[in-house]
Structures are given as C-alpha cells and as structure tokens.
Length: 151
Image (cartoon, rainbow, N blue to C red):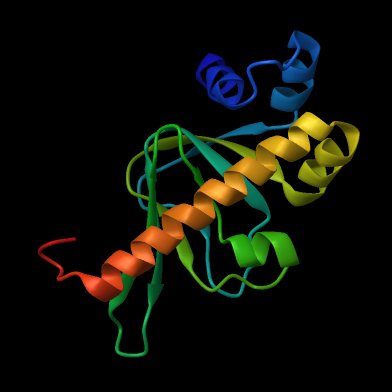
C-alpha cells in the first residue's frame, strides 16, 4: 500500500493523512495469476485496477483472429475497459495478466461515492482520465503515422 500512497501523493501532495487513508481503504487487493483474465468481452468491467506488481495487457481480437494490443499496464499504471467500466456496458476487450500480478481494484460505485465525498478525489480521477486520453491519442497517432519498426 505504501507504493500506492506515494502514487496518490505525487498527484495530490496536499492530501491530508485521513483523506489518504479514506481513499486507499476503498481499494481491494487482488492477486491474479499469469494468463488470468480480469476482463472479457460481453462481461461488464466492474473494476478500475491499479497495478502494484506485475503486468497486464488489454487487447481485442479481430474477425480474422488477429490480436491487437490496446494497452499494457505495468507497475504504477492503471487499467480497465473504460467504456465498460463507466457505462456499465459489456466489455469489448480482454484484459489478461502477463505475469503473476497484484492489483488494487476499485468498484465504479465506490469511485462515485469517493468523488462525491471529496473534491480532491474527483480531481484525482479527472487527472487520471486526462492522462489516459493523452496516452491513447499519442498511441493512435503513432499507429496511424509511423511504421511498426519506428513505433
């Protein structure tokens, strides 16, 4: 949990100790084995996951059976099928552990409660969303304008 606390404090350095304790207590530690799926198409992605240890891969499979990686998440990164998580719709991708991994997971309803209870928590999740949008835009631009070798 210390690693996670430091992660949060890097983004919200003014957060009080009791607020940090409230925030971190909302997460559940989950151990996943290599090759274990935490999200699959047609299931709702119930959690947003912070990677404490290990690595995860989000990917889709096209009609020809080819796998296309959407995101890798390593230690100190976040991952979920955002559309599924936010809108409680069936997922469109797989998220699988590439290594034995430790995750801190948060339910959407718990996230909403946190955001309503404290403006700083809402700010934290907004910053996460902004960074994720920038990452995905850069990745999309790169895949459209660069060769595989250059990427």
